[in-house]
Image 1 (cartoon, rainbow, N blue to C red):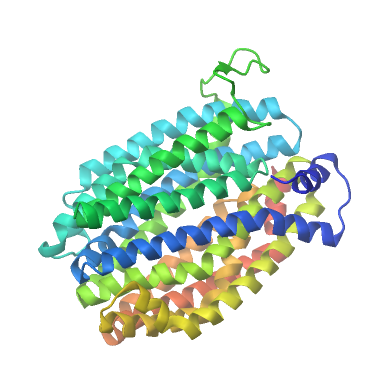
Image 2: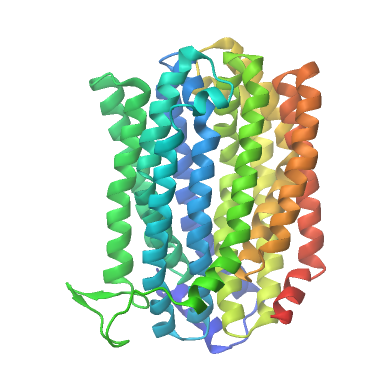
Amino acid sequence: MAEKDKDLLAYIREGRIMTGDEKLRLIVQLSIPSILAQLSTIIMFFIDAAMVGHLGAKPSASIGLVESSTWLMGGLGSAASMGFSVQVAHKIGANDFSGARRILRQALVCCLIWSLTLAFICALVHGRLPFWLGGSADIAADASLYFLIVGLCGPFFQMEGLCGSMLKCAGNMKIPSILNINMCVLDVAFNFFFIYVLHMGVVGVAIGTGLAYIVTAALMMYFLLVRSDMLRLLKGWKWNTEDGRPDFTPTADVVSTAFKIGAPMGLQHLLMGGAQIVSTIIVAPIGTIAIATHSFAITVESLCYMPGYGLAEAATTLVGQSIGAGQRLLARSLAYLSTSLGIGVMTFMGILMWIFAPELMALMSPVDDIVQLGTEVLRIEAWAEPMFAAAIVANGVFIGAGDTIKPAIMSLSSMWLIRLTLAAALASTYGLRGVWMAMAIELTFRGIIFLVRLYRGFWMKALLKD
């Protein structure tokens, strides 16, 4: 991280007053590396999808069928990581680096156990999952193997995410972003080798992605545990004894707080992932072309919302450290500014997506029917991007404040009561277009209710009660 970034973050911990320009610079400086990493991830998805897309509609559909299930497992892992990372951000904001390292040690143990449990579940259900999702026999075998391989790589995904999240909450956005960009390069290289040199098809995609995560997890752990000024647990190959004898035993205070923060997020990911799976079940009967188009269009749309997630990560760090430092007025100011920037950026990206939808879909697949249908659904979704941004960045603010229960309820209610109800009703008449109409309406509604919670200060009131 540049020295200017460190100086501005130090202002928060030292209780110094920041000007509007300094706040804006800090948000931008923290966001840009994360946004670049998010965009590189999307480029990776683009290239991966294009590689599979050129193998034909069935391989594309086999991955698309279980994609929402792999996201669900990833989301559950992410929730566990954030339960500990938010605590670390608060400790760093209060200049309690010893306390932050204590939480990190417990996080490593708890998250490893959690990720191994998820991997076991993936191995248990992989054979029947494609059929539960409504997939046909001609794509079930590839879908099942893809899900199994990716699921067994879950512990590496967990460690990569946990270490990256810890570094970001310490204010180091640069290293995780560089490593994530490197992971994308590795993923493309590995996938090219397994798909085109060894001709392993869908299985090759899963193996290539898994290997990229393994390498990146090892590097991320090195930079966190050995190189981080604030959080390192090792000095060379010896334990960092600044806190006395290192103790990795989970304690009730840390684990209970992590559960309080992470459990609502985990439940949200579980039910939101479940909603995505239900959406897949709604789409599956429409046909193979619809499944492939749905998967490709989601990848294209992520070009719009990944910058929002970059800003959300910055907001989580800034709000978390501001609250840890006792600067609640600064936390609110940074929250408002981050959300406004997110809306502006994603509105611009939505305009670009509407204009270039045909070209973007053509990059994903040579199949004319997929390109045409994908263009139509992307242009429906483009109208929802401003309020989608509000929901994404505001949620990052709430996470930084440790306010996760009510936002989770809001998201779940919106998803299950509005999106899925409308999707089921509209799919029979409008096909995949109806499913995406429902998505656009629901995301707009969710963004509005998140903005109301943000600007009326309910997240700060919840914090004051604690």
